[in-house]
Picture 1: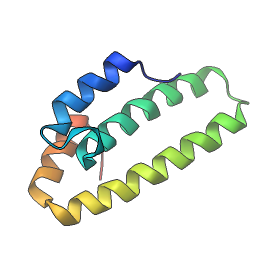
Picture 2: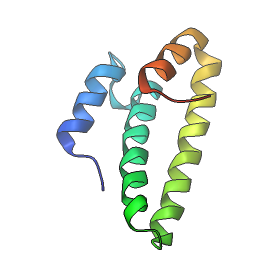
Picture 3: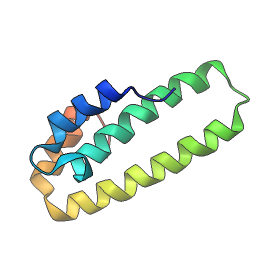
Picture 4: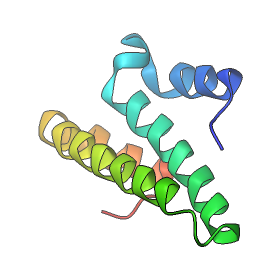
Length: 88
């Protein structure tokens, strides 16, 4: 369900640039990967309500980060959204 350390470091390398893992784009990319994994899990396990709650919390956190990043750098935000394949 969770992402591997290697995958996480790949995402930080690609989206974190010089700011590292704490950069907003890196955090958004990591959360997006985790959300995709949990969505696949919930397709099989329809009654796993505790995981569903965790998924909704991750979605809310990603939404707040997206709003922050959009205010900071709108052009980079739109490029990130296109790269990750997110709607918003």
